[in-house]
Image (cartoon, rainbow, N blue to C red; front, side, top):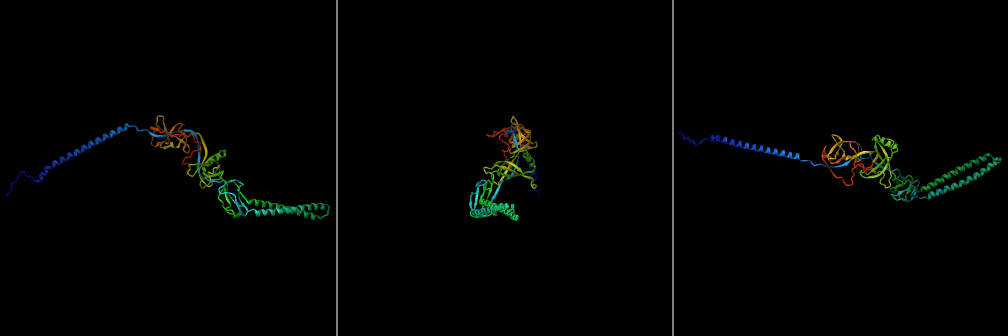
Length: 422
């Protein structure tokens, strides 16, 4: 039997179909709202960026702080830097010329001695006796010679009267000649004994400094001793040997042949402190084919004993001088797309790029062949942030500094920290 159907009751499927359109409209509304908020945010951000760019265009960049120095006129040297070794002009190992007992040492280790100063004494008694014997032989033979000459004179008179045979006269002539030879030999023996006696007093052959003693008093010494008694080294004057490339030989030889004196300066191992000033003396007679260099010798006065044999030094040789040229600090030289240039400071506190042609470099100074005039101010510090036309603020110079790189910088008195390194 059929049940009656309630008109208010709807199946579940019909209910879900009725709710679907309302949910879709709600989702679309939320999506539209999100799109609207994103658009407004993007518009506000764009306006903020435009405002920032406009504000940035309105600001003026501050001037760059730089240090400047003016180019000037002066002398600049052509220098060669090399490594050298100090070498004594005379090193003597003092040895005995005779054998005997060393009875006295007359020097102190490290003492400065002059030529002829007494160094040591050997027992002279054997040599005094030898001298006395040689002198006695000489006296005896001189007497024999004198008697033979008297007999010769007598025989010559008798032979003229035919009182004696000529053979007797000839024998007497030969006897006189024999005694003359004996006297000459005795005279030489006396001189040799006198020399040996003088050798008992060992003296310094040169001026120099005495080294460490090699033998003590009381030892028996002979001329064949390997180490000798002591070594004396001449320290004043002293020389320095160094090498330069063979390409520089012609310039050096030309200057020496013209009678020029080439100043030479030595620096310590760190190449930062000057030791002594000297003069180039000469160069070797041949080039070393293995290194392509030639050896030179410079002479140095050494009264303060600042140079010692076998000491390592850095050498600076002044070959020539370019006088009255435009010079500037090497710190102001820039290299880039324009080539070699400097930043020139204009009167309106701006900088402009100026190409320059450079010549000889001497330490912290460089010769300017073209592009600058004396008095032109160039940037030497702070150039890494500059461009052509940039505004600059010149820093005040430290007290005592010179604006002219040529002032107070005579050739040979400058030293760049890296100029002697290889």
